[in-house]
View 1 (spheres, rainbow, N blue to C red):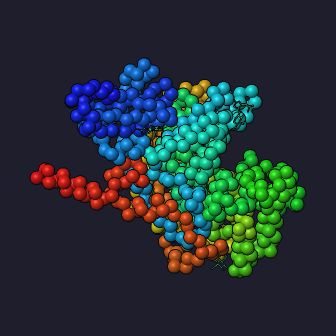
View 2: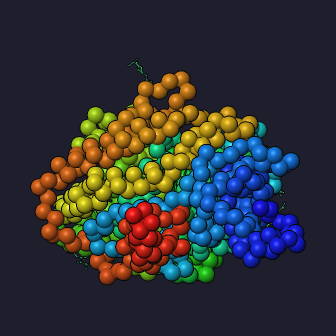
View 3: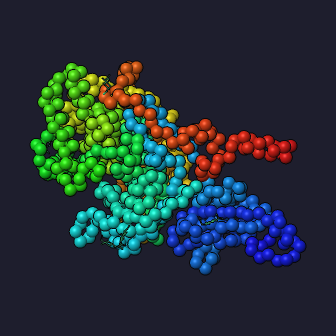
Length: 624
Ligand SMILES: *[C@@H]1O[C@H](CO)[C@@H](O)[C@H](O)[C@H]1NC(C)=O
Ligand SMILES: *[C@@H]1O[C@H](CO)[C@@H](O)[C@H](O)[C@H]1NC(C)=O
Ligand SMILES: *[C@@H]1O[C@H](CO)[C@@H](O)[C@H](O)[C@H]1NC(C)=O
Ligand SMILES: *[C@@H]1O[C@H](CO)[C@@H](O)[C@H](O)[C@H]1NC(C)=O
Ligand SMILES: CC(=O)N[C@H]1CO[C@H](CO)[C@@H](O)[C@@H]1O
Ligand SMILES: CC(=O)N[C@H]1CO[C@H](CO)[C@@H](O)[C@@H]1O
């Protein structure tokens, strides 16, 4: 059998009649400089780089191709490497993009229970949540001079400050079903995460990817399971609190292989509009990101009407606003919603600070979404968020919601959570799993908690917090449920974990950032009950709890703390609206009933189970 030569013999005429097309689509994870081929029946056919790193090709053959594998070829088309797995051809294969050396998987990620009344739409037809059960392949071809400068000097050597340069790139994103390409820019993000050699990036696109023009690629370099942050994101969402979420991506920039990242939404106008307001075109209000400056935290004290006073504090940073509503040149107008909040809050504190009546709560609820704040605090407790709102008023934003004319807090970046943290000597580590309320107040003389304290001093608020925590710790943070979620993400990424750690060890950039040198054993052990704690000279991070160990212990702690709480009185303390949460029909309709997940890496081309059963019956017939 030959692939492309057609003689005039009877045999080949016959072959032509019976010839069948075999289509192959495969993503290379080997980086630039290699191409891929397909090996079948002891023949090799080079594939075409249709949309690097995606290769494809058609083999016309009259022989049956049953088993095949992909091979890596160098520029002379010589075989460098073969896949360690053997594949079996089926018509489904021709419709999906496979990945070199990765089995095709369809992973059903179980949903976390949502025991509380919805508060926000959480998505829209034109702003669907990023599906959480696949791994994208992300390749950026970037201006090499600027990219090299950024990756070699995340902190600019000449000045010591963060490198903020935008680098022009062309991005190619490939999933098992789709391909996408757009020009745009990347820049480095984070300060803490910038200490690591595995850098984190913000991506801005000129074209829309799933309704978005921006997302983040987070390295999660401090964490051996790569799952904690994804779990935290989904816990907030399960509690009805908008949080940026996403899935995983294999990341390649020019000829550098960075490994496995999370691809999550950016805190963008579109994200706010699509998630909070349920329409990516909705009018948005103004968001202010909160930062810790030295020991100074945002306490929302009214400082008068001059916006410069708020700029001067240095903990409030103007973030997103709607240019259709506020003139970007009008600085006072952009700060006005923050000033108004501090004034409303300061007046409330003066009038109702020591008033335990329900009127105090009603008045607070007129401008603050208390319910959303308490849910956020409950998740921060269960995850022990060391770098978010309650403890440090950081990695969170105050958002003025114009639809409700009130304010809410939205947090992000959960890399310090769920038993994997940088050591913080302020925290009382010995009581962390049992303490479900004062854990975030180890010393209020060191960390200014005046804002949260004046809210928590009201018994109705503590009561509501307790009901929220009781429900979430019993239903959502239940080990059975969360373990299944963790196991499904582990199954999704397992084949990429070792490659990920090795990629960083081999990453050829000049930057001498921190590397934890985790192994696949660290991944497997720390998913369960084994800490990665006794640091050798090269380990940067302390992970004193295995992920499941933390979920079990902290869940037990908060279930015990709320064991006497009657959850039948489950009424929103504010913002009691009737909201229908957006559900992606692709995930929640057609596939929610599919339990036989023996399918390929995509949901769309799933074979109906009736056909599978038929197939099994026919097989049985032949065996008998
Ligand atoms: C390969 O990709 C090209 C360009 O997208 C497309 O035209 C062609 O049909 C593809 N071939 C196969 C076998 O999928
Ligand atoms: C590189 O970065 C500099 C500084 O931001 C910018 O002026 C220049 O246009 C960039 N060059 C390319 C090719 O992107
Ligand atoms: C970078 O890309 C933008 C458009 O995305 C373009 O206007 C600009 O000229 C590019 N800069 C360089 C230096 O190539
Ligand atoms: C609140 O923050 C302001 C500005 O940093 C500070 O001057 C003030 O002392 C703080 N108030 C409290 C109660 O800590
Ligand atoms: C960094 C760290 O925790 N090192 C400890 C590792 O374990 C030995 C023996 O238990 C201790 O002596 C080190 O302090
Ligand atoms: C019991 C309770 O506090 N219910 C409140 C829920 O939210 C609505 C709207 O903010 C209030 O009007 C209710 O009083």
